[in-house]
Image (cartoon, rainbow, N blue to C red; front, side, top):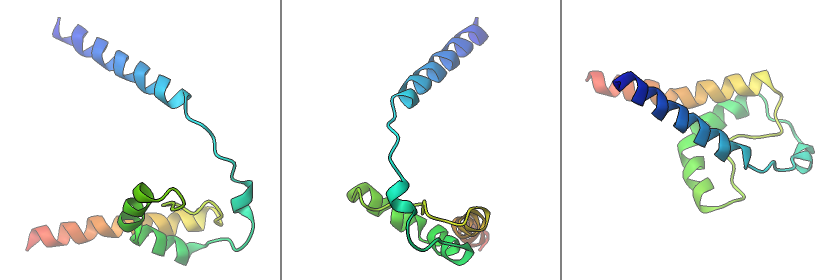
Length: 96
């Protein structure tokens, strides 16, 4: 009986999430794709300032966390390494 309730709750949650996601609008990004492309170093910087960018994006619609006009894999790698630095710093602090 308990497994059945858990399965029903999980199914209802997944259905609700699917309905919410299906209503999302797509933003036109063609205007953003002109100009300089961001590479690994800018990705690293953008990843490092992610917490600040997130707070700014809540207050201003013109601020984004992730640069759309990037070089692809190299930017993604830099962003990942930059944003994961926050986890490494938190882990080092907790050991002391």
